[in-house]
Amino acid sequence: MSTNMKIARICQFCQNEFTAQTTKTQYCSLKCSSRAYKARTRQSKIDESNRQTEIAKNPQLEVIKTKDFISVKQASALFGISRRTIYRIISRGELDIAKFGTRTVIRRSDMDTFFTLPLDQTVLRPIQEFPGLDNCYTITQIQQKFGISPGALYMLIQRHGISKYSVGKFNYVAKNDIDIIFNAGRI
Image (tube, rainbow, N blue to C red; front, side):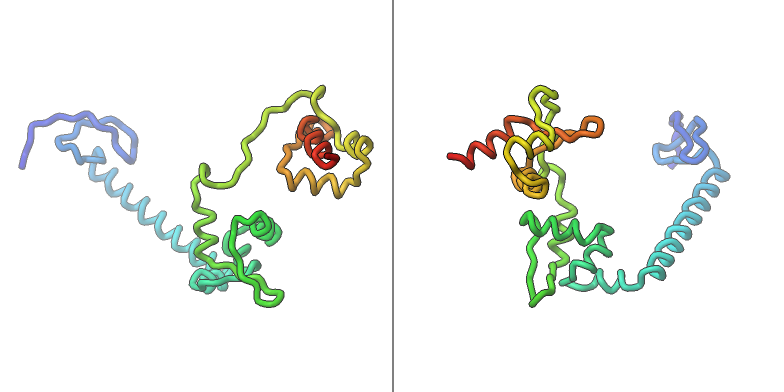
């Protein structure tokens, strides 16, 4: 079916403007079409080679992908995160596990769904604005005022999800957050 349409298009390969006679034309010439095909073929070969190299570097990764249940070590290798991060996710209750003696086993489908959740469904704390130095304690001030060890203070801040702010070489915590914790303990 011939047409007398004249459509101004941009070539997908050389980025030059040309006049096309159909709405599906992507390239200005056979030369650009051939070069684009060769570039796609070359890129697919490179991608396949990179995939084969990745498999050769870590052959266990393909075996892990086929398993339904994996260990924490295997999960860290599969998802490229540390074991400690996985244990933190587990301790926050965001990931279900099974224990067999001392061995922790994770369902791979749970790991897949955890990492594919959209950001609005994940458990992220909103970023709070810095309240200002007048409304904050330094870590040392909190330790001296309430007589608490550095480790215990760190655990309280982590447990209650309190935001820390770094300004220069000092870490600050909002006074009202700390006062709520320590005054609630005295009631």
